[in-house]
Length: 153
Image 1 (cartoon, rainbow, N blue to C red):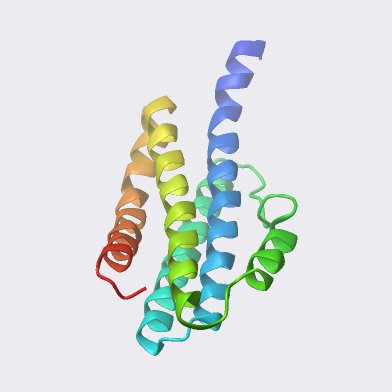
Image 2 (image 1 turned 180 degrees about the vertical axis):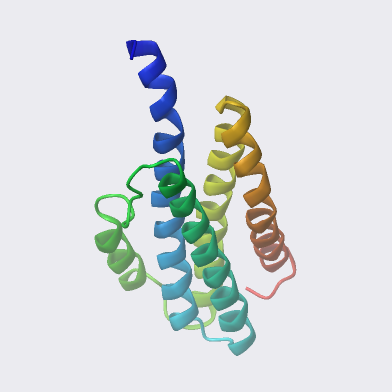
């Protein structure tokens, strides 16, 4: 197989696995935030978003398996340490939920941007697969945008 052909064949693995790592990291952040949020309604929204991200991870991993590759099972190196440090640095009291929401919104927007960028760069078949998954992230984005702007935090 010529080198250029090999690189094109490997591209979907790299794209799917990169997005999977980021999705795993964000899912973990949502789970932690749901566990630490003070407001019960916020906990429910964050838990639902974590479940949506869980399904997204499963679907991305399935795409890699379908292509004959080995999907990643963990987030980026240092994810656990960043999560622990982040939860230790949360302010006590009234601003706690606000900081959780802002942190999640920033990370969620970065994942959404990574998906959109991957769609723009991908060949037709992976682009179609990623576009099919995009509405899940857009739903989370709407949730987070609403939470950031409605004064709940």
